[in-house]
Amino acid sequence: MKVYKSIADNEVMKHFKTIMGRSLMNHASNTCGIEETLAVASVLCPEVVEVKGYVFISEFYNGNIDNLEEQYNHNKKDIEMFVNSWSLADFFLQSSDESVHKDEIIEEFGKVIKYFWQLRMKELFPDKKIVVELGDEIMGERGLTITVYQES
Image (cartoon, rainbow, N blue to C red; front, side, top):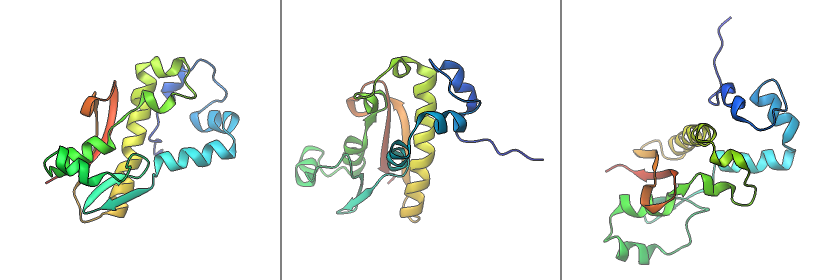
């Protein structure tokens, strides 16, 4: 038998406040309803828009491309990085618990988001060189941040 591990490491569960299953998949089935699972699917595989050759996660884009081009002197990478930058801890503002203060859990979440966003970008734009980057305080965001941009 050959085992192909999940992108999410079950070991992260040792940092959970309450464990509700023997694995992450089992924990999810015991704690997330179908509505939450569908919402998470949209985070893992987000809606993406292409505007004037720029690629944006649509949740972050507010239609202000002309202002952004002026502000960033038409620098495509900076514009995309600015719009697509997202502090991972801020994702949980409404449902915040102590897990957002555990680096191991936030880092595992970042690794998972990066993996799925890379797949999404490759699926939508197979001929573009799109980078999904994790880093600290990218474009002024707080803490571990994810962003997406096209490589020149």
